[in-house]
Amino acid sequence: MNHLMQTYNRLPVRFVRGEGCWLFDHEGKRYLDAIAGIAVSSLGHAHPKMVKNLQDQIEKLLHTSNLYQIELQEQLAEKLGHISGLDQAFFCNSGAEANEAAIKLARLWGQNKGIKEPAIIVAEGAFHGRTLGALAATNGRWHEGFSPLPGGFFRVPYDNLQAIEAFADQKDIVAVLVEPIQGESGIRMPHLDYLAHLRALCNRYNWLLMLDEVQTGIGRSGAWFVYQKRGIKPDVLTLAKGLGGGVPIGACLAQKEIAALFTPGKHGSTFGGNPLACRAALTVLEVIEEEGLCANAHEMGMLLAASLQKELNSMPIADIRHEGLLLAIELEDEIVDLPLQALHEALLLNVTQKKVIRLLPPLILDATHAQLITEKIGILFAKYFRSKQ
Ligand SMILES: *Cc1c(COP(=O)(O)O)cnc(C)c1O
Image 1 (cartoon, rainbow, N blue to C red):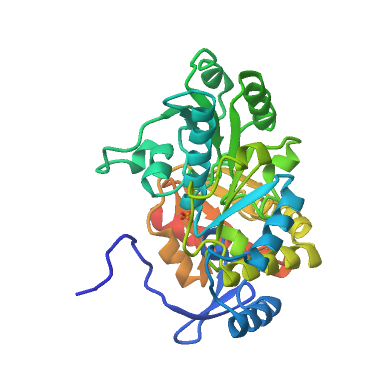
Image 2: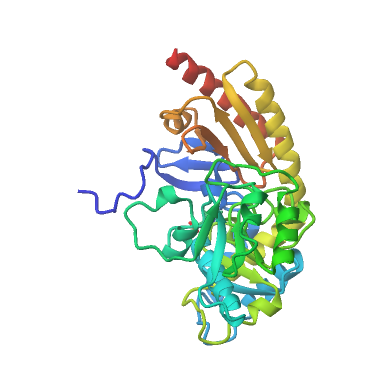
């Protein structure tokens, strides 16, 4: 009997070591990592600076408590404030928790204005996490079997402003929570002016604009955050995945008037923002700056998308789309067993929404890696489509 709860259909491979964009299994075979632990290992594996800084931190201090001051947490909050333009941070351990914090802030903000049952507008196809509040905000297909879920969410089609505007007269609405690009839903990209219009709507109706950049944030889109490329700023921002480069950390950032609602006792976390996690996140931010990884994500994204277009142009591909190093190859039909076949080509990728191959490689990707990914996908698809005939 396997003593693990079977919450995942795992591929038959075990990795024991990593280096840069490569992972090695127990037999020493190496795999090109084009998924980075689902947008987590932003600096790749065993980045020398990460190794050095974490070794140093482990020797000094792993954990104290949020009962005490934590200098690394203050430094991280300041640094995140600087790159995001948002004033204050609350640290937790995951994306779901970051969104729970955002939902609680929105409710406090509403209650503070005398709204007894504050409601949040969310999008169809959204993914915000698996805890009950975040799950209620997430696309309904993940809800089955988990009722009763917390209420207070209205779901509208993604990339549809009229559907949101229809709530103009609803006095209970306090916030809109969306991903600037939907990740789990298959790298779904709204119109480029969607966020700017959302910002304007939120200003007009006095709603908070809350962006979930758990997957898209921290350099992956080619900028620190997608909203910066769209020329707006949210009131609340949630982060996790790439922030710690593999060490679990999440963050909810907010402008100070909103953040101020979290007075002592209103929210908390035992582990959130501990010295180890903060040192990891500070290292990630430092290396992204030193190595110019936002620009690299932009350039490598363009390169990879262009070479994939060329390599796959005679194959039945519905769409290739990307922003920075968030890439999707959408097929016309449902995909069967492709991640397993990719494993045989020593390539790690992921399939989401049944038809979409998702590539989220480390931000340290170089042109040689991009070429190798393209070649491997070329071979993989040639075999795959041949086997379908
Ligand atoms: C992965 C993800 C989450 C959930 O993060 P966890 O760390 O798994 O809780 C939330 N929002 C988005 C956009 C995500 O991609």
